Image 1 (cartoon, rainbow, N blue to C red):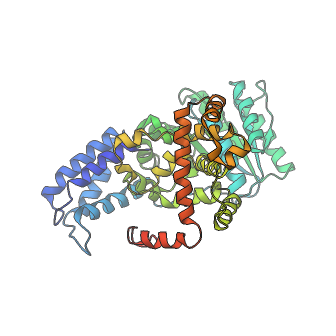
Image 2: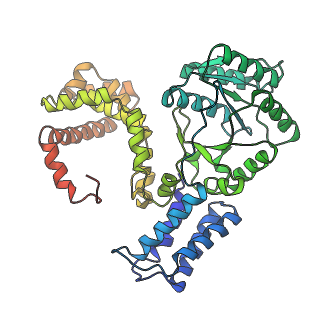
Image 3: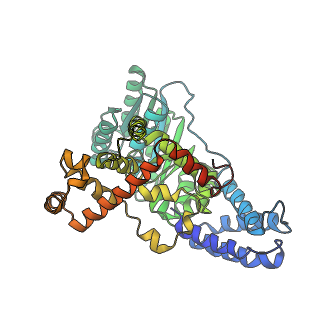
Length: 451
């Protein structure tokens, strides 16, 4: 996410390293590099000019204080202005209205709107403990109604049916009455998408808005369209009052222009970002955390929150107890850890949120492939229970059988078994009091306050 922008900005910060102070002369080249970085990221020109003027004004004359060098001081200034640009704080949904709270979701075709409705329903159900009802008013694309129905079944939320021969505003009104009768906390209304914002679309959405009186009107935009995403959201907001934006496909956005432009151009906050196709791939938008990711500082808070929500703590406790009792770390345990890793969004997601990972050489970044963890799990699934518990019995003939059964090769299997052995040794060191000794040894190598 935002890899290109992050790389370019870090190149700009290198210019100031080793300088005693920030001055007019040494900051000029840095600001020029940042300007090119933002324009290449497809940030709107008015946004580029605004943020550069603010950064320059604050940075000039900044002295080195408390052992912080100009590079670090300048990074902090840029971070603060990125946060201001995207919104000072995470703006959550207003769920305090009289139930059912209505959330109207709009967006252009291809933005991932219907999938986002499913993700949002799941997030509200699991994180806010709300009883959610979803419905579709997209009568022009029958598959949209079926798609939402299937998503509702997958996440186990209620679905109010609709048909292509019905009027969109009547569907919304009937769904609202049903939500009241069944005492649902929230009603999410999915609307029809278009290739562009036109009068027909706006009139239709305005009618739905009028009969449903939504507390939240959210516009879903594809982040990969850059500043066009911000312009599209503004055009929609000029016709109908938005309360926020949901930015989708952010995992494939190496530039970041949409995230940096939307708030300034529309005046409305980004409330959620969607990263990935899985239904749990939706997270609240935290401007400070996104700014940290852009500048290569990582996002430990989001990583911790994901771990709390997605890691199976019961199985983790069982493994810890097993290791404490010196029972070893077998291939079943190894597979569990691989699955936990996948639940966290894979290694690429975890690394993207660790500080300094943006500085990894391209050769290392390009070699991170989460599919290999899936292949490793499949190899373990192809083993017998005895082989998983006692890997040492896996001889040549067994390897050929396992490789054939998992659609892999013997060399791949050998690599996986070697990685398991390495993990086994590490787990052995971590068992008992060895864990505390390892942490003590690492303490001096960690950032201040980490332990």
